Image (cartoon, rainbow over the protein chains, first blue to last red):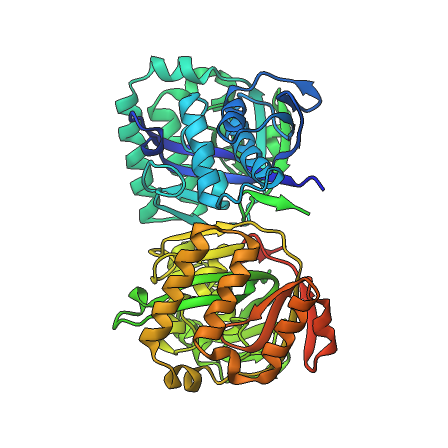
Length: 278
Length: 278
């Protein structure tokens, strides 16, 4: 019997990056939302490590790190509901679900937080994410009040039942974008948005702070369609902002996003985090 | 639209009670398992507080405390999958799911841990439980490494996919039982079983430590059927122990429990904790 694990995709509203020498003490503060879609991973031990994503063989350093750390050789089969590199945390979700699937296949008896911390470490070491694994470990609208690995991170959650509209325009080269910005400035703004959100934790204020962050960091300007799409949603009484970091928009009451060039879809909020599928 | 919340039932394998003046610093260390069945709660504001459990009007002090703290008046409708007082944490699950349902109905925008801590506090104040709410907030096989409220408790989890056999013989007067025992002795044994379990966290060792606890505390002797039923499961190559605190047995490969007097049923393990139902 091969077990399959699901990890939800996640989108980040605003964040404050913290990078230390120790990956377990690195991460990001901020707010992210886990989605009802994500990745499903199953594994099958054999002689060589092969990673198959949506039917294609991939080099996938973050997942390779997981396999190596857990002593796994074999096939890792990943089904992704979102494109990689667009701000949906596909790398973190793949790492997380792979860690759980390997633990099950090899009967390693590792605990939830041992596996989640391992996935976080692999993400940070490979520079593919900072806050995704923490978010995806829990589920809901996840508030990261500190920037640590899942077992050490101080979090809170809101189990909001949102129907989200998404517009995916394209990839965003995260590393280049981040190196163009002052990370200290980004971190300062992220912390400020977090503080303002927690003073009044409502859906409306979440979108407000998200947009403040996107505008003040200048990230909203990476693609002119983003600001246009957000404005269109707001004009039709919806709420919208930019997904961090992706050339993508998330909204409630954002059906108007259909009119823009890109992939439009509707998703719900996951309330559970990484888990085994029946 | 009235939202319905689910909180899983939970059974305790072994525990070490800690009672302080502050309910948020009280609780229990130990290991408990959340179940795929539990309680479903929906609420409807009106002039008077009424609590309906499986169609009958109840006095339910723990849930009344929740309503009072959140300023709720109206109908709280609870569907319970297990009888109360038999060790399935029905009181904690009802408190937890009620807190979330009221939060939603009154748009209070309280966070996950604000609501979970409130339910924990109501349980401890009403002496209806110590570790159930923490367990039911998370899901899976939950290890409580410290005895605090959900937001402060140091926990870990195992997402084991067990098919459990249950035998419910009857109620157990928790308060009287506990007052007959030396709580310090119980706590010492609970801590020892926890330590031994964490040295080798397997399903087999969980049952082993559970039985050590039941035997050494003498709790197994409250009903002679319990030891007989456990022995019958073990004789047919299953694993079994006593539910703390209930006149009840839990097992894997325990189909033989059908032959004993009482309610027999099969359940799975919940991997999620309290959540909104669609």
